[in-house]
Each structure stands twice: as C-alpha cells, then as structure tokens.
Length: 112
Ligand code: DGP
Image 1 (tube, rainbow, N blue to C red):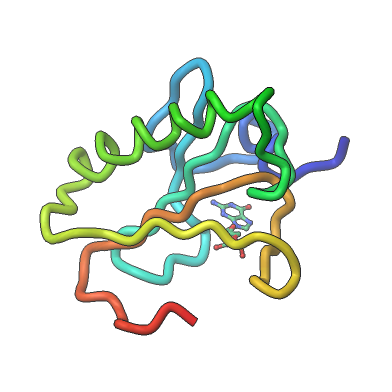
Image 2 (image 1 turned 30 degrees about the horizontal axis):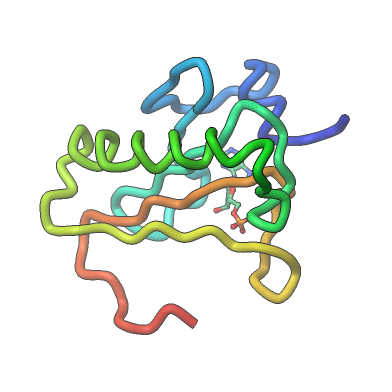
C-alpha cells in the first residue's frame, strides 16, 4: 500500500520524531500552523476517523493517553488543540488517521 505516513513510520521518509512506542508514532508537521504542530498517528494503517471501529479503537484510546504526555513534554501548559480532519469536506490530505496537536500560542476562536 502506498501511504505517506506508513512510509514515515517505516523510516523510508524522514521525519522529526517527538514520541514513539509500539502502537504510536508522533512527529513534527512539515507545514506547521502553530509554534508547536505535531502529528500523532497509529502504526497500523487506519484511513481516517471513519475507519475506527471496535477492532482498532484500542490504538485510538492509546493515542489519547499519549497526547497529554506529548503536550506536557512540549511545554504546552497554556492549552492546546487536537484536530483530526476526516474526508474531503474536512480537507483531509493524508489518508492515514492522524491527530494534529496545535499549541504554543493563543489559537483562533473559530475552528471552521
Ligand atoms: P491533513 O490535512 O489533516 O490530512 O493533515 C496532513 C498533514 O500532514 C499536513 O498538516 C501536512 C503534513 N504532512 C504532509 N506531508 C508530510 C511529510 O512528508 N512530513 C511531515 N512531517 N508532515 C507532512
């Protein structure tokens, strides 16, 4: 399967890693939209939020255990935003489930 984020997990495409364990990989977004912009992804290929089900939701729960630890390590004490774009209307550009962590400044009040 030709997937950009699977290639990043495999190390075929370089990335700036901020966290990794047996289920999860987190790295800096190549086009940061905030002073801190990290992508947190499952190592298994799930195309989007739409692909989460009872067979794979444990990795999603684990991602949400990792996110506060990553945020703390990044010093995001003032708060941060977690976003996952799902599908074309949400402008999802990479079809591998990912959660954006955005922080390091006062973020916009509007999300859409
Ligand atoms: P989304 O639009 O929600 O699908 O977000 C995809 C994000 O992936 C976007 O913010 C840019 C980032 N991205 C795309 N290609 C690369 C890459 O090769 N390396 C890194 N680090 N980030 C990438």
